[in-house]
Length: 223
Length: 79
Image 1: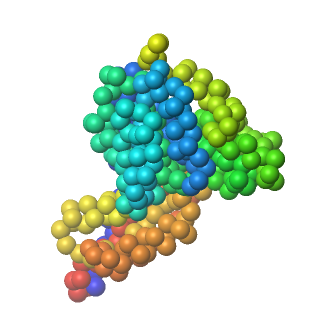
Image 2: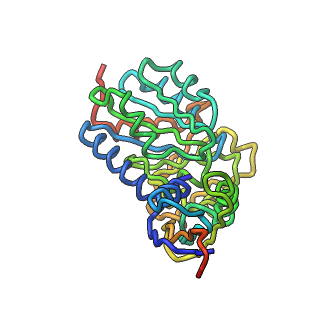
Image 3: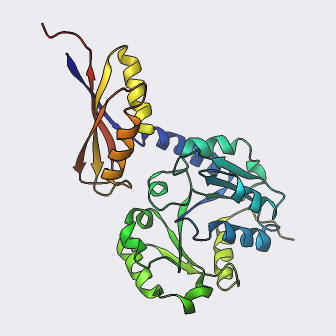
């Protein structure tokens, strides 16, 4: 038996990062802002996007890419609220989107008529944090039905994000969730995080979220 | 899966041989759990075209996830 060693010294993300750079270049050239939404399953990403499309879909030309392990359910839910493209990526077992998938999805999107691209990543707080999709910013959604110590358990997600959206705040009177502690723990992981809190169900706090999206997009349609 | 793709590419370039070991460096701040990664790779690397390869993980500082080296069994005799 002859064993030989091949030196590799290669970053696992190297190939993905090249695709991400291409995505970022194309979006910037087209003047399209982009957000990558990550969260645990059930934190409310799709519901937030449904309410967002209902509220400002007519004034802000958005394109959405959804990632799911199986089914196109999220994309179909969102497509009911917009005439614009909602592109589903079914990862077939993969626990995150990668930049190659986003680049492929861009081919179907009319970037010249898009102001904001929102990527709804696969619902998990581990892997999506480490994959650059070429987005401008990552947004972590944390629902009040989860433990407030999520930032301690999944620090990489909070380190990689620029924004944290605390969701389902209408349930705060009914669950033992301390928003101040969650915020403090998130800031320990990343002192530069900006916070929003809202209920997509009741609409409380949605104004702040919508204002953020408006401020990101240079391509607003004033009706 | 990206690790398997890189390993498959390298194996293809080598032309022959059986993959025996994939050595990884996993940063303490990398967005993966080393034990989980090892578990998944152990499952993938026992499937074709890899045969019965093992995974060796070395923890290191930082956030990088890197393939350090591969070991390949050429099947030749030593003499």
